[in-house]
Image (tube, rainbow, N blue to C red; front, side):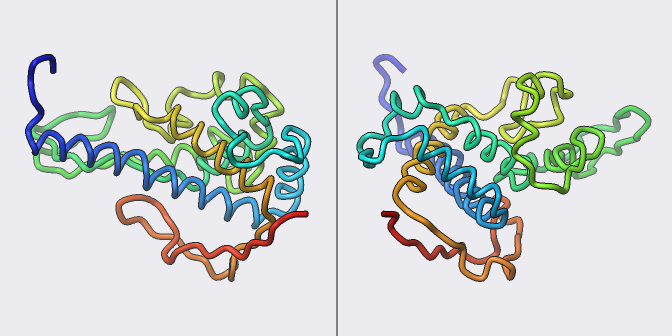
Length: 219
């Protein structure tokens, strides 16, 4: 882009890519973590105990910077975030494609004009890849540190895979970790009407209605 000005359309396209890919998805991930943690009391207790262990009582939001969180890197909180992504990934599939010619995919015949979609979530909730896949269990990521590397490369891909995987995944992980650690250090919370929450898929996978939290400052 040296010596070249961006057009208004190029600026808008880049802004939309960053906004859609990096804001809504991360905020949904954080909301899904809140839901999953509050839905599982034992998990919630472990998260708070770990945050208290890894961060000082006088830490405030300004202290939860890149260096602070990266240095401490609370393992159970990271496992919760991974397990949440397995259960409630913000982007569970690709954008649909239309086959431009007849094609054989293994034993499956794809006819020209067929609309195709690929779901990441099916693999992440499959018994073939994860024992007891319908159980929310962050411990599965801690019992074997090499578990993720042992999986089929396409078994756990909340950020997609291949050359066009999510460019912002590392920033998203760091943002989520900082926001959640800082929040749990300062507040207790419950999700309002948690048992009545339903899920839907519009642009991303999310709760049908906004997630409402009741928060109380910790002493």
